[in-house]
Structure formats: structure tokens, C-alpha cells
Image 1 (cartoon, rainbow, N blue to C red):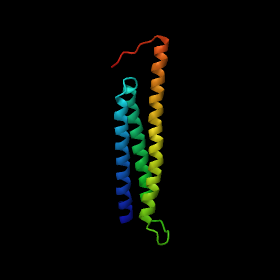
Image 2 (cartoon, rainbow, N blue to C red):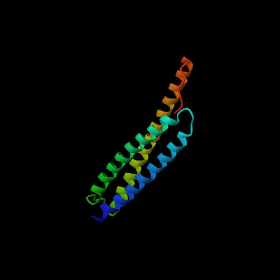
Image 3 (cartoon, rainbow, N blue to C red):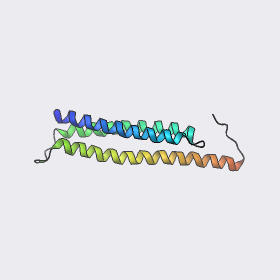
Image 4 (cartoon, rainbow, N blue to C red):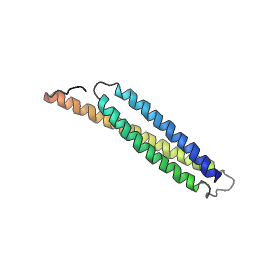
Length: 122
């Protein structure tokens, strides 16, 4: 039981820290006059998906932390390490998704300008 709680605590702290980093990245992207409005929506979507998937991964690793038998290797460290690696991969995918959403928004604005359409800034 204690291994499960330790893994949950460290895993949730990792999810929270990486979500805060994604939020800061989104705040910086909102400063762009072209993609600012779409940056806010994309950031919230990406953080929501990353947070829910991250907590799910942490819960899975925590559920099996007490059941792992790896000889003399501390199972909580293995579970926390696995969760950290998985969250790191998820973070890189989330950052790439945010970048792609902003690139797509920038492309749409340029196409509208080329077609002679003008957007009204909110």
C-alpha cells in the first residue's frame, strides 16, 4: 500500500509540473498577434488531454507498484521511473500538438490574407 501511495504522489507531482510547463508555453504563445486566440484554446485542450492521460498512466503504474517483483531493485523506483519516462514522451507529444495547432492557425491567417479576407481581432 505504501509503494502505491509513494508512486501516486510522485507521479501526480510530475503531471502537475509538466502541465504547468505546458500552461506557461501556452501563455507565451498567446502573445502572438496572429495565433493568440487559437493558442488559448489549443493550450487548454492539450493540457486537458495530457493531464487525464498522465494521471491514468500514473494510476496504472501505482496499481502495479506493489505487485512487481524485481529482485533487490526497489519497485517504487521502477514504477516512478516508468511513469516519468511515459510522461516525458507524452509531454513531447503534447508540445508538438500545440505547435502544430498554432502552425495550422498561422497558415489559415496567411491564406485568408492572400485571398483578400480580413479577420477582425477580438
